[in-house]
Image 1 (cartoon, one colour):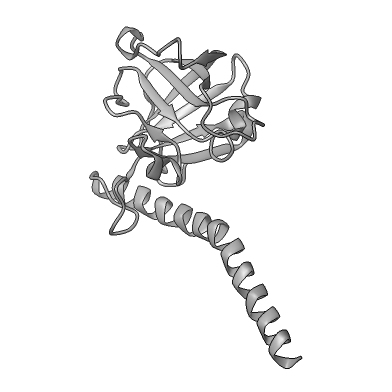
Image 2: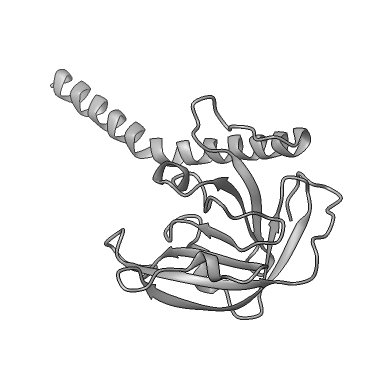
Length: 196
């Protein structure tokens, strides 16, 4: 009986540790990303959040109406997107089109609540914020329609995630694309580390 109880307690503890590992890792990763973003801004150079990281913070995305703020990472490969939304390689924060992708069930779950006219802000490493106004959103079938990044006008921001938001099947062909346009010039931010 004692062995059975010990086996049951050990099994329960193991399941608890495995069950908490992913959420715990996510919380710790966000703190490390915040510290790397602060260091990137202070030194004006890329700073990896942990020594073996294959990505680094390149910006902060803020959605004031939804009280949402997140670190944007370099590139959009699977490992990066596990920790935060990623900026498509080639996009910049200095005038060209910017495309940011994220998972629909984590960092970009709030996109479904964005409405036309909402403000989205993107902070560059130098601390400047660019304000964008949401023009609308649409669903794109990636099997038949590609986003032509070369034809996007300067000052365009696209936020892209999988669709539908409540789908049980991850990785389907549908994408939810929010389009926003730059409003005015970049503005200085007094506290470049704090975010919104």
